[in-house]
Length: 301
Image (cartoon, rainbow, N blue to C red; front, side, top):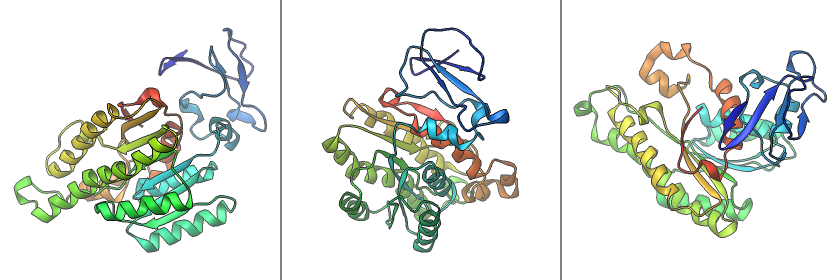
């Protein structure tokens, strides 16, 4: 038995009768071998799904179809051109969701768009050049998104940067500004222009602000980055108190992932950590299963 957000979920292998008075939803159709698994939902309908069982993270695609059965979502991801943003966009698109992505790297946007268009020809993905550091750029982004796709169901504020390893008194002022402008002001700019649209359209929506373990602790040589992610934690908790019922904003620590940003801190040791593609399998399921009950939470993948 597992408790999650006040709901009761029980995991069990297919064919294990167990007990309980809730509905039984087998995931066995089209699945064979070690991928055969069943979820028994106790006391709740099929409209909500439990968090992923660790054994299912590399499961058959039919499992993901079930997990995401509540319908296709439109997901806006900032900083989509590389690293976690790109991996998450690919994973969500492969599960049938519509992606809106933005970045300053036009070539990378074109490449990602081509990749998704060939593998998901029936979906309308939208990729736009935008600089989240600039309020005017995000304002234009919001206008274009509304014209072409409508209000996103989920926003992932992923765009971020980190300073080169240095003691705070050795960090150039312009580098410090770049970190805060991207990580904090960039997130605030997206909230400024998209939250009112979400409220006006349906008073629903999930906002995920990518935080860090260094937004809940400190580390030498990356003080500007730590400061920015502590700000994301505080911003998320404060905005949570301003959102109407039915919406949620969370700060999400992705864990330690082998990205260019990690390599800038850890050097070659970054290769010892999981790849963004492996992370995206878990992160996508977690994000898709967030509800208004998570509002204000600080979570970790």
